[in-house]
Length: 218
Image 1 (tube, rainbow, N blue to C red):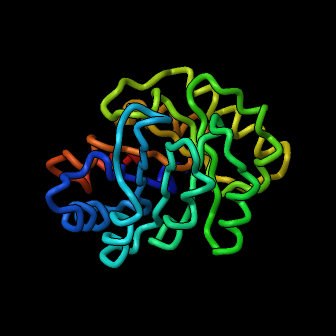
Image 2: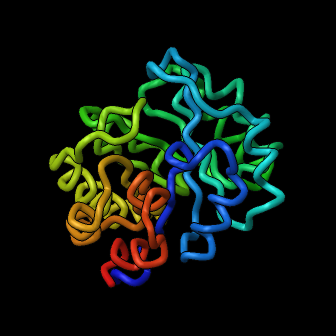
Image 3: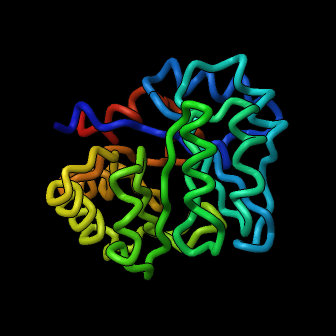
């Protein structure tokens, strides 16, 4: 149902001069998750947060922290982010890292494991991991920078992820990231998405509570 859709504001779009205030605002407005993009300047052409930022904001928020590791070697850095306060570690399918090692690290520390897919990566090539997922993240833009336009092909990929989930009896939540606004959100929810990652449309809104309600379909 639309009302059950989880909104995950992307920290990348928050004002960096006061993360605590920005996070509190969206939490009070009805957000349930915080999406934290970690970029290394290699896997994607941009740089962002380290574990110190996650550790700094963890005490001021009760939101579920989905840490999206857009980095070349997430198997080396998963544990520091978990220790900093991540609730889920989401790695990219396209990395050559030891994903089973990341899963073990997540399991041993009681946090979720997720896999993210760039727009042209085939979901079925990674189906062996799907029964172990907390989050399956569909990128509806090329990862690395915010503010890009939504790629409509993501809708079929969301529907495909839902079909696979039903076929194999998995329980992962389907998330979409990139170009999310009230119009594209409605299409994604119709396709079967559970989590909407939204950046500027939430953090830059004059009324975040109203925007989150609109994204949920209200």
